[in-house]
Image (cartoon, rainbow, N blue to C red; front, side):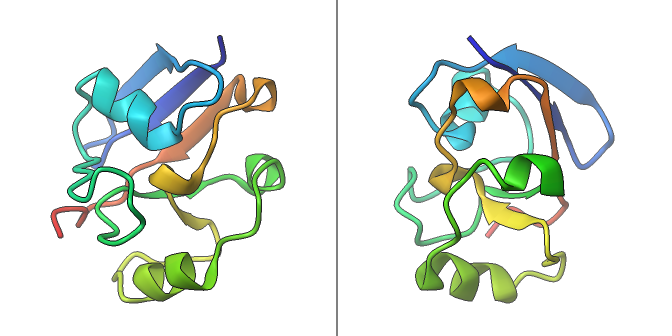
Length: 107
């Protein structure tokens, strides 16, 4: 099971096992980590699971959809590494991934 490290807005780090085939968002929610609200439950409609991932790991995921990009662009912390955690499906390649949860995921 891949281990993913979530860095929360207060710079706390949590490394958790995330099952293959689930989303990065589900890994956070299942472990009760702070910072990812997941208000819409993974429907790509709220952006409360906004994360920043490294370019290295970004290459392992599909390109963001137009809907995802549209939601992310309204965030004050939007950058080239911005993704919605609900759209990131965990594979074996995710082992060792670190991501940062920016402040402001409260909708």
